[in-house]
Image (cartoon, rainbow, N blue to C red; front, top):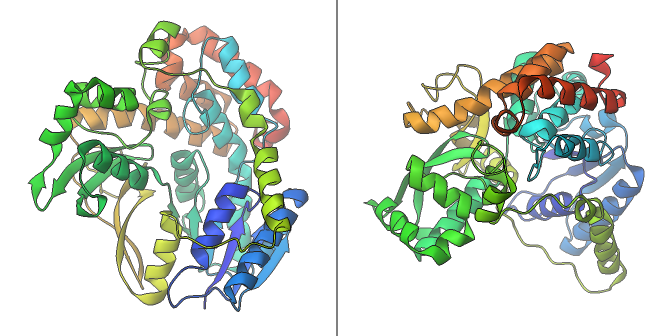
Length: 429
């Protein structure tokens, strides 16, 4: 039975989902689940949740709770990672400083100034974890859930290529279910083929029993009620011909068309970022979880649509599955740069994760992807080498930032963010 480490286990909603998943694989029970986080208080609460799940399921699973990364990783066969270096503390700088310059980010953790800086902060921690894996579990598979997904995965593939890793998200699963709802067809009858980059992958084929469903989806462009539910993505479909995987709010910061003025944001129903609501989310989750732990009622287990458990199940049981994950572009998407981080279909079996060849994306889709890819490339260079010029240029090529600011102000904003976050950016010291 596999030994699994969760690095960054202090996220209540994510850790809860993964723990339920890991205890719901038919015929596979982890022999050990090691929970690691730098925040001891959060970790203690998640440890209680994990032990409660194990006890209620009658599972023969050891729960190890530790703030020591090496201890958690020791002997692991799968490492599931979801980290945010610095925790919440740097996030007001990620959002607030760009907002002062007129850049209103929807999420700001995968693209834009906030996403780039989260990638810079994560880099030292990612490399340290990879080095620990080299020492105590060199053959483990790293299942990477941390944002910014593309920057993190690209950095790891360049700097620690000997560590087997894939990047995992739930935007393909979530969007496919939404599309089935928009078109009024049963989800289990929907077939799709999706490729691109994380959070900007394209439904290249949508079918039902071999029938092309894109004509049906395009009919919805004439339905204002349906379009209003997903205004940005339907607008992208209208002008670029394909539906994209990330939500309306999040997608709006990946392109230069929707967030550069209040009038545009109002037109597409986009709300400004609510930092106060975000900052109190942990306390709300923690309070609800403590109430559940104090109650004698069983917590219950149900399986989510996260790909981590699908991959572990396929590798442990040799029951193949297909997932969409982020991997290096080794000729998989032929009109995106070699080596960049792409999200493509992959087949998983006992021997591992096998990326599928995609070929050329539609040129307009590849162009939108590449507008993000070049910014990601420079962010990786900046993160690895402490190169301020690379950071400036990553921001200068970011679609939303370049739609709002002149070059001189981008440099000024970057300096302000670098100065405000110096304690989390040792490579720039």
